[in-house]
Image (tube, rainbow, N blue to C red; front, side, top):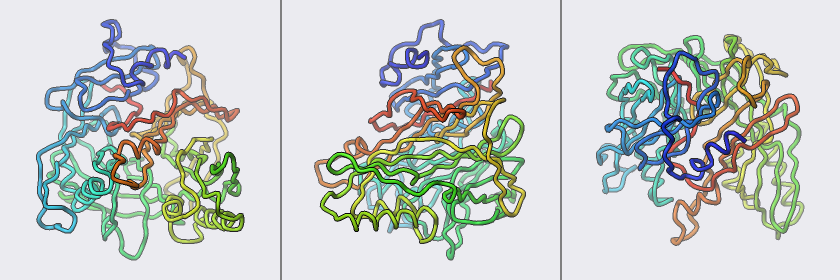
Length: 455
C-alpha cells in the first residue's frame, strides 16, 4: 500500500516533480533494502527510485552526456544506459542490412549516486547480431527496442575499472556464435563467446560467483567449464550449469473457459541465479501459467495431441522449446504469462553432477528477483514496517510479441496484446502472491530493476 500510494503517478508514466524533502541525501545509515528503479523514457532528464527503507521516491538528474538514454540493466550499484549513437552502414555483412544506415547504440555504466560514468563498446561491435536484430525488427515490426536486445549485463565486481563485464544478448540467427559476450572497460569491441556448430547450447541467466561466470543452461546434463580469452589475453572461466527442473513439475494441465480461451498450467518456468547472504549459490525458479487462445473448431483429439507435444517439449524429449512450439503450433496462441509460484534450490557449481537441495524457508533473508538486472538477497533483520521476512520480491520486463498481421498494425499495437510484465511479492511459507501493480500494457524502452545504492 505504501509503495502504491507513493509511486502511482510514476507507474502511470506521469512526470510529477519530486518534493525537495524526497530528494536523495546520502547519509551514514546504510540502506537495508534495494531501491526500485521506476519506469522512464528517452525524454526524461532524471531517474526516479522508490526507497523501500525510507518510503520515499528519490530523483537523480542524468548527466548531459546521458540525456536521451534509458536504463536497460542494473548490476552491483551501476546502471547500464543505452543511448542512440551515430548512424552506421555495414559492408562486410551486407546480407544482414538494407542499404539504409541504422543507428548504433552506445552503452555506458553510470552510478547515479557518485555520478561516475564508464563507456563500454557500442553494440555495433557485436557483428552480425546487432545488425541482424535491428534490421529484422524494422522489417517485421516497424521498429526496434534495444531493451529487448540486451538480456543481461553483469559485472564481476562493484568497481567497473577492475571488472569483467558480461553481456547476454538476444539474437535472430545463431550462425556459429553464441549470445554471450564479454569486455573490460576501455575495450574497443565486445568479445563474443563462440558457439559450437554441432550443439544447441542455450544461455540463460548469468552471474559472477567466486570469480567464475555462471551461466544457466536448460539443454545440458552436467556442469561444463570453458576457458574464454578476451582481447587482452585475460581469461574468464565460464561454468554452464544445467537447470533441468521440468521433471520436478506436475503434468501439464489445460482448463478451457469461454469460447476459445484456455489456461495452461505447469508449462513454463524461468530460472534465476542469486547469491545468498551466506555465500551460497541459489537458483530461484519462477513458475508461470499461460493464458492462450485456441481454435475452437479443432476436435478434441487434435488438442490432446498438442498437449502431448507440449509435455515432450517441456521434458526435453524432442528438439526445440516451449516458445518454439507456440510459434509453430496451429491451435494455441499465448497472450499472457502469469507468475504462479517459486521454488528455491541450493547448488554446488563445482560438482560435476548437479545436486539440488530444496530450500524451504528464507528465514534469515529476503530475495529481490528481476529480469532487468542482477537479483540480490538481503538480511531479514530490522526490516522496515510492513516488510515481512521469507519473501521474494519479483519484477519482470518481458515483452511477448508476435508478427505484424497486417499493414495497419503498428509494433506498439502488437505488443499491446503481448506484454506480460509481472511484479509482486511471493510469501514462500503460504505460497500467496500479491501483485504490486497491474502488468502495464504499454511498451517500455527501459527496464525496471532493483538498484543497490553504492556511493
